[in-house]
Amino acid sequence: MAEDRKTTSSSVEWRVTMPDNHSSGRAEQGVEWQVKVPEGSTVKVEHETSLVVRAWAQMVQFLVRRKDMFIGFLKNAWKLGVDDPRKVMHGLKVGLALALVSLFYYTRPLYDGVGGAAMWAIMTVVVVFEYTVGGCLYKGFNRATATSTAGAIALGVHWVAHKSGKQFEPVILSGSVFLLASAATFSRFVPTIKTKFDYGITIFILTYSLVAVSGYRVDALLQMAQQRVSTISIGIFICLCVCIMIRPVWAGQELHLLITRNMDKLAASLEGCIEEYLEEDSGTEKEKKSQKSQGYKAVLNSKASEESQANLARWEPRHGRFGFRHPWSEYLKVGVAMRYTAYCLEALNGCINSDIQAANSVKKCLSDECKKLGTQCAMVLKELSNSIKEMAQSSRLELLVCDMNLAVQDLQDALRSLPSQLQKEALQAAQVQKTSISSATITSVKNENIVTMPLMEVLPVITMASLLIEISVRIEGIVDAVESLADLSEFKPVSDEKPAKVVPSDDDASVAAQGSETKKTIPEV
Image (cartoon, rainbow, N blue to C red; front, side, top):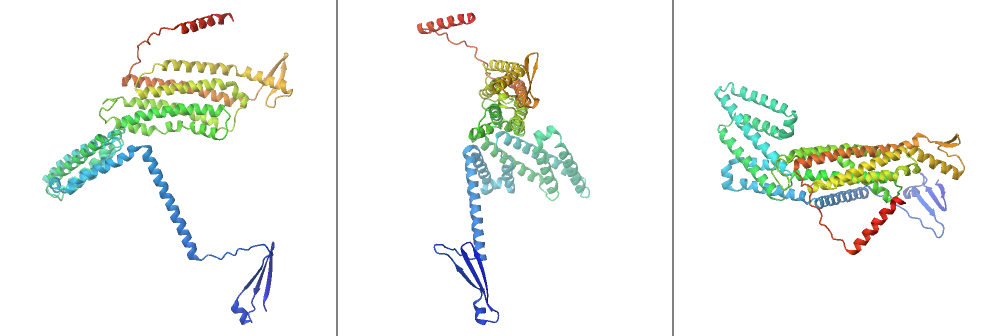
């Protein structure tokens, strides 16, 4: 017999008719579904997708994702090239250098001149060409020196081994490779050698091992060494010509600009931290100030870049305003002083993001003094940045430092008077509300009202003010480092010319007279 099952879901009735196993007609027809839908309703029947359709949909989604990734990559590459066209030019210069040096392999007269060692010139271009002129000179000098030195030593050892007989020749050659490779590898741990000649030591080990090992089976060893040295010299020469003559990028100039950019970021970060802490903003303005206050992180993360660029700048010849023996180490001292200040800014940013915050009424007691000190510190940093950019001594720097010190004194005076100011404001609030302050206790001692406030409500503001005072002290260290850089770099001195004397007109004379009368009346008031 057939079995009916009825299921009701909301207003739709489903009926399933199961066939009887003894009924052949029903068995052939299978399960019957009956759906009753009320008038005015619609039911959408979704069929199960097949495996092929699901696989095709997944493949389409995969291709769409890859297309989006490729388009995103192209957009990022385009943005990178637009932001710094010198990187695009660097790629073109590398391609040009490789095209020029490949002529020694494709052209028969040039190929006959250097022999089968023309490929070494192409390898030299690939490993020597760098983004900056200093990096190219550093690698080119190290490769040339290491190749010639290792080749000469290898020829000498090969001659000694050849004179010792065929039995001792492999022993002497392998022993020399072991000793020289071990000593050269150990020398890379010496700080001075690692800083200046690390790449050269690597090339020395490679060249000596190749010449010593291959010379055992090669008869014309001297001719092979000459061909390799000549092709390597050709590759280095082409690298230097292309790197220096076509839109050169100087490591010294990059270091100079990096220091000034970091100083501007430090000033902007200091202003942003104070504004974010003392002012109540919400939404977009708060996010902008939060991003502005994060500029100190670039200063903290620039140590490796500064040291690398300073090391490469020592190899560069005179260019622009920078001499051959320009004091690049002084830039590192300025960078150290800036990072020393950035650590305080990081602590100040921690106060901003702390869970324990002071009340707005407490912040207002020191708001003006903190803003004034922050503004003066930022002005000193910006003036130092402009002085380094123009490579000229500033005539306003001493005045700005004096204003910063005066702002520090004002903040210290405000800190001394903070307890009495808080007590006065708390008493006024208590008298207005005629109730006790929730966060303070009011007692009467000799008919005088005294307010005792919890320390945790005042401590965050005091910490912020103390950090600002410490930042001003560390900024003076930056001033000393910049002045030392200015003396050794021979910045342009401050102009001693006096401004031209201006003859006042009748209107100016009357205004000056009124001003003098006003000044006379001030003491009387």
